[in-house]
Length: 172
Image 1 (cartoon, rainbow, N blue to C red):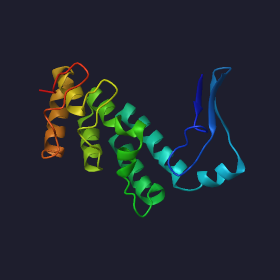
Image 2: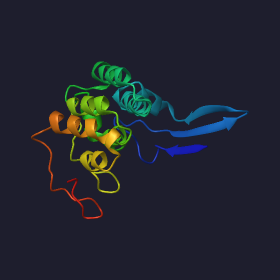
Image 3: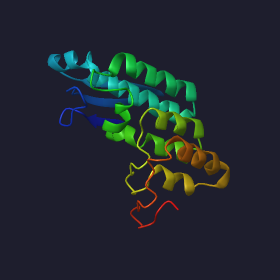
Image 4: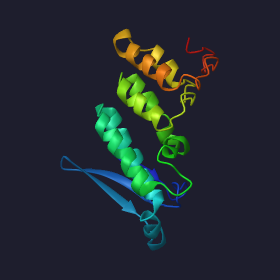
């Protein structure tokens, strides 16, 4: 069902593996192929950051604010290093950087607020060049209004309204 090669592109902390998601008789199974040295890295911050990102992805998809808060708490306690706050996971991890976009797309204003509070950059652009404000403004009004307010109130001095997406459009 899925193949992820983190052996050639290790995650933060040096952890490497090849992950396979297999489907068998209606069940899904995750198989990780790794080496002893990388199992040691798994017990450090690298894999724990991955666990936080994976939990944030699931919580964002489900619209579960408390699960997001819990994931950040776990990150602060187990995945952060001395020079790395829990919110740094959102800034440094390519996959996590745009989770706020997914929350905006789904109309999860409270999750957008949590991500901004935890250090998500409102000016980060997704593959289409959209900032979170681009995404929020492009949604139906019933999904976007609260999200736009969460963005504007959560990071009022950080938003760059002049950023253009790949279609050369600003969020406004």
